[in-house]
Structure formats: C-alpha cells, structure tokens
Image (tube, rainbow, N blue to C red; front, side, top):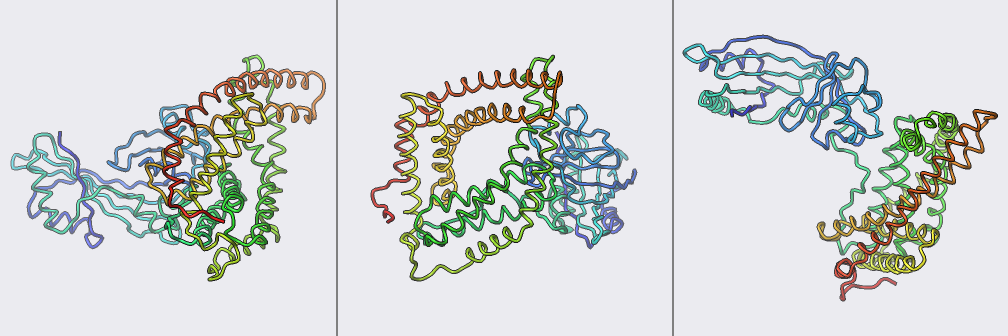
Amino acid sequence: MALKKGFNISNDYTEQTLISELETKFSLIKDQTMTNSLVFFDTFDWRLFEQSLLLYKSEHDLCLQRISDNEILFRQPFPIWPRFIWDFPESELKEYLEPIIEMRALLKLTEANLYTAFYRILNDDEKTVVRLTYETLETQDEDKAGVVVKKHLSLNPVRGYDKSAKMLERHLTAMGFEAGHNDFLVKLLAHGDRIPGDYSDKLNVKLKPQMRADEATKIILRSALEIMRMNEPGVKEDIDTEFLHDFRVAVRRTRSVLSQVKGVFSEETTHRYKREFNDIGKLTNELRDLDVYLLARDNFKAMLPETLSDDIDPLFDYLQQKRGTALKAVIDGLNSAKYTCTLQDWEAFLQETPSAKPVAANAAMPIISLAQNRIYKKYRRVVKQGKQILKNMEDEQLHNLRLECKKLRYLMEFFESLFPQKEIGALIKQVKKLQTNLGDFNDLCVQEEYLLNTTNELPLTGAEARKVFVAVGCLVGVIQQERMRVKANFAQTFKAFATPANTKKFKQLFAPESRVKPV
C-alpha cells in the first residue's frame, strides 16, 4: 500500500513559486482550493495532546485528528463551543473522548485559517500518479492575525505508481525541503502564550544524590509552589473542578515535605509554614467536598432504584447552592492580604541561598541519605500497622494506615529522581494499589456521614422531605454494602503489598548498608 508522505515548505516559497518549480519536472493540474477557519481545543493539562490527539472546530464541524499521521478519527456537526464532555450529544466521538477528558473543561487554545490547495501529478498518459495537498496555516489571534506559521505539502501516491512518488520526493529533497509530518498545532502554539505539555500536576524535579538536603528540599517545594500558582487563576475563574484539586494536592505536598523531610530548615520556619499551609488547605476543604459530591451525582443516582433516582435531586440542588457560597469564600481567601503575604514570604524563603553554616541538623547532609532513611522508615511503619490491622480490622486503624500510605507515596514521589526509574516506579505502583483500597474505604465512610448530615440541613418539609430521606437512606444502604466489600478486600491487597519480595526491594533501594543516617 502506498504511504502518504509530507514535506515542510519554507515560508520563503509562495504557492506559485513552489508549483512553478515542480512544473519544470512534472505535469500538474490544480483541482480546487478551500479556506477553513479553525479553532483548537484542549484541556489545561493537555489531555488530548498527551494522547497525540488534536480537537478543532472547522466551520460547523468538530474534528478529532490523530497528530502522528493526521488521520481524522471523527468529524461531526457541532455548532457550539464544546465546553465539557457532558455538552456533547451522544455519539461515538463522545464515547471516545469521555475517558480522556473526564471532568476537565475544554479551553480554546488558538484560532487559525487553513488554506488548502489540491493538485494532481500526471504521467505521459495523463493518468494521475500522485495527489498533492498544499496547506498554509495562518494565525487569527488578535495580536498576530495573518502570520504564516506553517506551510506543508503532502504526497499521496496512487496505487501502483510508487516510482513517480519517489521521484517527486527526491526532487523536493534536492530543493532543500525536509520531510516531516504536519505539526500544525505545535507550530501554531509556538506563537502563543503556551507550549503543548507545559503543565503537569506532577512534581517536575531532578535531584542529584549528593545535593545538600536543604537545597534539594527547596527544589521540591518550588515545584509545588509553581503548580499552586498555575492553578490559582482557574480556581478563581471556576473553569473546572480540577484546578482546585491540583491546587490542593500541591498544598498537601508542601505540608507533607515540611512534616516528613525533617531537620532541613529551622524549627521556627518549619512551624510557621506548616501552620500557614494548613490554613490554606482548610480554606478549600468545603468547596472540594461539594465538588466531589456534585461530580458524583450521576453515579449516586445510578445506585438507586429507578423509582427513587429523581427523588434525591433536591439534595444535589442544595449542594449546588452551597457551592456558590463556598466558592466565594475560597476566592476571597486567595485574594486576601494574608494569603498574598504568606506566598510572597514563602517564595522569598525558597529563593534564598542555603547557609554555609546551617542551624538545622540535616540541612547539609546528602539528600540521598535523608531520602532513603525517611522512605524506609515510613515503609516499615506501614507494614507494621498493616499487620496489626489484619488481627482485628478496626475502621480507625484503616484510616490511620491510609494517612501513612499517603505520606509514604509522597516521599517516594518527592525523591523519585534519585533512584532507578524502573525500580522505584514499580514500588510506587504497589503503594498506589494499597492506597486505593484504603482511600476507597475512607471515601465510603465519609460519604455515609456526609449524606446523612446534609440531608438534615435541607430546607424541605412534608412529602418532598420524606422522598429525599427515603432516597438517601437507600443510597446509604448501598454505600454500606460497598464499604464492607472494600474492607473485606483489604487483607488480600495488603498481603500483596507486604510480600517478602517487596520487602527485599524496599530494603535494597532504601536501606543500603553504607548509607549515612540523618540526625
């Protein structure tokens, strides 16, 4: 099968100049031209781009294209801006995108005009042997409208005429053009404020084993602060719920570093910022709780018999009303002088050069030694607590183990770059499996209490109130059954985590005989 190939055309060449050059060697016929207005979309965290996908609106159609080979996977009429996945009509496109986009908003990245001209190359018998597609992309953003960002020529050989295509390829190469796929989006966004893949909720740190512990710790904390800063505008503008989620995770990571990476900063500094970031976390608690329950609305309704599913709607309507008040409190908090001062002072501290004579006991020691000590100590604590739980399976113990697992995972992620990626990556996955079981159990416990307490707050009376109470009671019953199922799975999940083989791997990686122990 003949394969389509492309060449990047220099901006020095106009269409006519290029075609005139080709006409010295080949017989060309121009079929048609078209100009399309394009609007490109992706989530803030580049979920489509990371899957090599390009979503754009062309006139009245929404198109999903694979970046690697430019194949259009889906095209369907869609006159409006597709804000969330639930705005899509039921279709194969929606089914394809839903597990990728999830709850994130689709943001308009940029606009462009695409000019396309179609040509055919004929042989001596005037038969078509190669089809050409010449494309020019121009920005249409307000401040850079009309700027040409990419010219591209695609060659699509007709079956049986590969030699003609090869001859054309050699000629284009001799003209100085490089073969390449049509990376329009990357080129287009290079003229804008964002670069594809410029945001991830993961800490982006590269540490060196012999780096001073205080210096390395500041690098981790600066990365967390950057994630907070990048998500602040999205939280305030209420674009989607994941801005707050990522903001909160960055806050939790900051608190975890201050609590778990011991003896690298002065006690005064550590105490102050543990308190400050604890306050920031509390500021966002209610809003995040409401987001979680509102996002789960359809799932909760699906747990109920069809005759009761609509009866629970007043509960979610009430939560939606409460969300407006909670959002305002968060925005006010992020705009407050206290928050601004805290982050300014924090950023200034993180930029300070480490002292040659630090007062903190572990500040100047190699970060590899501190990381190994903290991770291995936390791992042993998790295993010890887990074995105790197997004896009596108390709910409170499971809750405490969940917190310890979260601390262990954070520590491993903070210092991931210090260890062989394959080994530590596999161990982090093991921790995640255990953490998922414990997290699911905790969530189900919290949901029971939250739903019952919130139902008592509803401003309802009479028959409407009774309907909601019955529906919530039924839902809580389903949740209780699921909670018991998850709890029953703990023993198997923990035993898979605490195997002798895993213990050996943790010891080899984090407890070598030669390590320097922190004070």
